[in-house]
Amino acid sequence: MSDMARPLSSLKDKVPPNNPEAEQAILGAMLLEADAIGAVLQYIRAESFYSLAHQKIFQAIVDLNNTGQRVDLLVISEHLRQEGLLDSVGGTAYIASLTDRVPSTANVAYYAKIVLDAAVRRSLLKVSHQISADVFDETVPYSSVLEQAQKNIFELTDAGQTATYYTPRAIIPEAIEIIEARSKHRDEFAGIPSGFEFLDSITSGFQNSELIIIGARPSIGKTALALTIADYIAVVKKIPVAFFSLEMSNMQLVLRLLSLESRVSSSKIRSGNLRYADFEKIQDASGRLYEAPLYMVDMPNMKLLDLRSMARQLCLQAGVKIIFIDYLGLISSENNLIPRHERFAEISQSLKSLARELNIPVVALSQVGRDAEGTAPTLANLRESGAIEQDADVVMFLHRAQRENPDTELIVAKQRNGPIATVNLEFISDCTRFVSKAQNQ
Image 1 (cartoon, rainbow, N blue to C red):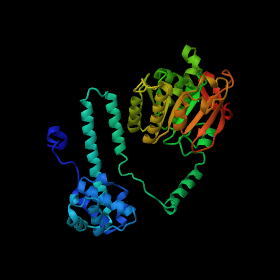
Image 2: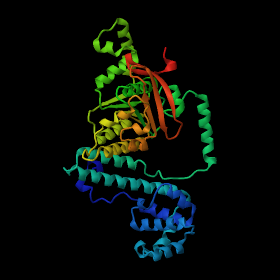
Image 3: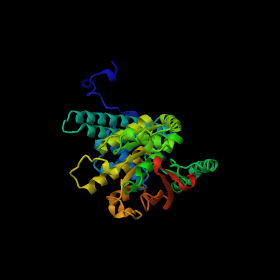
Image 4: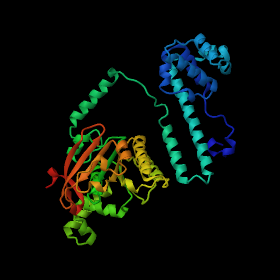
């Protein structure tokens, strides 16, 4: 019977994954060659070892090396004796035996990968035990169990990705290749393009790991702008997009997208007062949308944990490369008893964390305060702006001097890694879409 088919009771007494020979070979190599220490530290840390004795020896070697001390048998033994740890690791005789357990110091990175593999498997075992305990604890909501399980699994995917260093000599060849490739595709951007040329020239597109906020007063066109951009990314660029709508149903979104994509007035679509030519345009738009990798999530009062869980699922299963959230103020916190500004801070920080975790842009819409009515919004006008302004990498505001005026400014008020500027747009109210003024025919 395979391990997968065995009942849990028959597995609980098994020794967790570990490889004592590889652990001994690593420690022996580190005692023989100082260069081996740096090679090993690219993959593992003391806690990666299964043996507590090996953890102590490894940490002692690293600590001594960090002080610039040349590490050998006598130095490490004396250090452990002073720390009162020598007997607990097997004494000088055991440390001396480690150098005999090294097949080849040249293969120390390979040994480190073996130890890393076993460490990750032990961590998976620990996570599975925690999930099992939480499942049987009826005081823990199932959504919290799912959120914590997914978070723990995602953290394990970064195992072994420790910091390292590079010299310009190692990086310059690749940098030159990137520059040459960009020179051959001058119209393309490093990030995901919005479809608005001037905006993309400022931001180089929406960048991975960034939280982008689009703010405006009600009825200025936040959702229309987000849908215009999402439509361009999914339909024209064929890049998978997730659109979380906490305010509109999926049917409402699709009807707006059909109007936006077909250029047929939304009022005509609502009333059914359509000509034959309108039907043809809608049919063509339907075909383009049908093939688009656009994933709509319709869940009013969506909790933050549910949003994060669904975002991870869409990235893993559908390959989503950018997420839109309409809008920030409608996300529910798990704890609605805390003050509103603390809930906003929790949501804002969580969305920034999600963008970094999934390594994709997250675009969230937000309302601005009443004090911005009739004037160009600023960062101070963002509701609960202390948290949002701090966490966001890019903050943009939509502004129209008069609601009936189609001329609209998209104000890039904050950009952590680029300039601020104003993009002139025009709102086509009939089909609820935005265009650059130069693009309007």
